[in-house]
Length: 252
Ligand code: GLY
Image 1 (cartoon, rainbow, N blue to C red):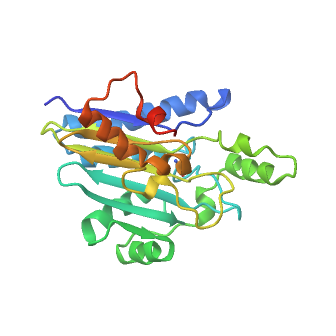
Image 2 (cartoon, rainbow, N blue to C red):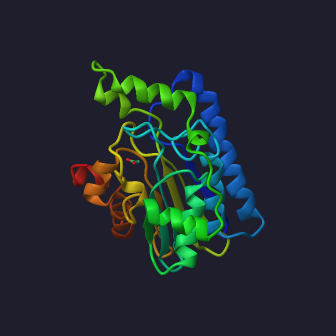
Image 3 (cartoon, helix red, strand yellow):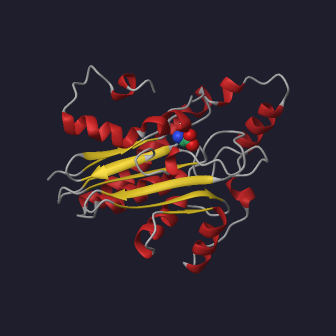
């Protein structure tokens, strides 16, 4: 089978001055993932590589460049899923690590669980030898600026919904296996401990060799209402015509 990878750098607004960097970031991510597939690597490795690349790129709301919570800290969510056996791993509200997607994969492969959060995820990361980094290293000047702007009394809450979005990737490898990966800093000025769709199986992503793979981006609370990633696969399974997007049918 011919391998394919598709990546996204989020549904949020991309300001003119960041357009080129964001474009080049998604291109680099897709090429890195594709080079794994071309060498016969797995869809799982390809999506992890692509998302890692965007987590390391400050143009995106994931890893370095993540938006800040109400306390001005980075708290990140991520999920990875293997369409071959429906195995998945996720982390939520994690701080001080460079690549939450890699930690999500470790949850999938080294534990009997699917999701570790906050302090537990931190302990697990330590046990796995994942280096802790200063939280400041994940914070860009821009995310700090957006955070403080949103604290101003006359700020428009709709504005920060347009901040850069979650990143993700889906792939199919030459053996026909599919996988998805999604990673995010969530929503600007979110409450401490808020967990969005990106850590939740079926909302932030889903992969099933019998149907396909999805990675979502957008307003988490809206997508969680309809378990969007799995819902999309449901409609793919049912062969719902393209003219009737699942989202509309379910008031997303
Ligand atoms: N879709 C990312 C979030 O709402 O956290």
